[in-house]
Image (cartoon, rainbow, N blue to C red; front, side, top):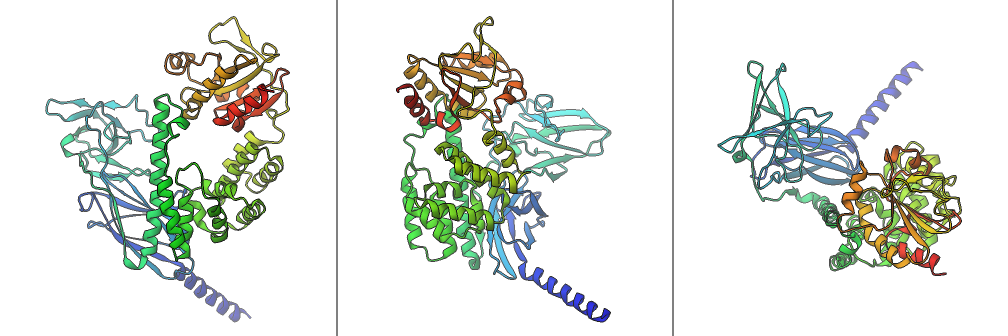
Length: 549
């Protein structure tokens, strides 16, 4: 009996080893800089999408690398190098790709440095990188920047703030060695002499290049190359759209107005045509998801149905963008089929982060449409199956059926002092008899500023109909509000400042976990609308329904 157990164990070990080998994927290639040459230090990192790095390897002196994984599905490679921008490349590894080998050569684009350098600062405390208290480089007559100090350390690691165009903290031009900083960039290492350090930044040594990053897969992995192109295109468009919205907010414009004439419908039409011609099921599925990431006013609902029919609920492809599944299912006109698919997705998909994000999106949509039954169903699933997730905690604060801030409830008690007249206070009793919009906001909050156009239009349209707005600022100082109102948005309504913002008792009473948070109250002190029904174009619609009766 004992002999049989030993033999069984031996074969089990052999079998397990064989399974591991069968699933292993080996990625090899060369990682080079923008000039086509190996970098002083470079790394290849491998991990799941939206997850921490699992494996990281150094490249050899010639830039070659080898990295392996037993994972399947959607994984992410990150390529980094000294003085260069990191590059993400997704790999979709199917379970039937036994003993798979992938050859992938990558060239990185150089860091984008500021055209004119201003103040440069030395960062050494990486746990608490306080820019304001860091050492300042002194500009020299020869155009270089120098900082000198004493130290008891045998080596000093540092990065510099002020060199890179987007204000990333990056390595300097003087280094005895480099070490990866864990976030896409590198720290320079210098060795002190006699307890003293002199660090020089020479602008002439900055590698300025317009060469774009490149990725080249071997021929047998053309499908992976096609998928990576689709994925990278999605990320680039998302970044470009975010930049457009940010620029609008900084300029004091309503993002909705800034995007009113913006459309990618022509590009979306090209992808739609590709979908109809694509023969490979995997690439076709990726293209369907790609189509829904283009910015256009009206999507083809038939493609939402096609997505449900073509893409398995268990597919890791849904991890490309967390918002895709809820958005696509919302567009699908076959609601019973869409709900059945989502339930199957929750049961079969292995990406828990994706599922909790999708559930959160579904909750927002259910509340916006007033579907309380759907809201309760998926709220309960999120709390029961993923109680420790960030999405569950946020949902509990914003969607709890036991909330005190919901339609039909009496507005929570408050008494706040006017920013313009310290002798005046605002409270439910003081505002009784009026319809009023409580607006939790801050000048630093992009989405809050983005709502300014809608709020001003609503105020002008309805102020003569027994309507008022009370804005409660979560800014650092009351003066921030006053300065903001000197600009484009005058906000000619009631204002107060909430000391300690999110940590305040008032925030807890109103269950404020994110801003903007609008709440509409009727003359009797009852809450009649919240959140999505009071944002964007929905604000005018909701107020018209209430005040034009």
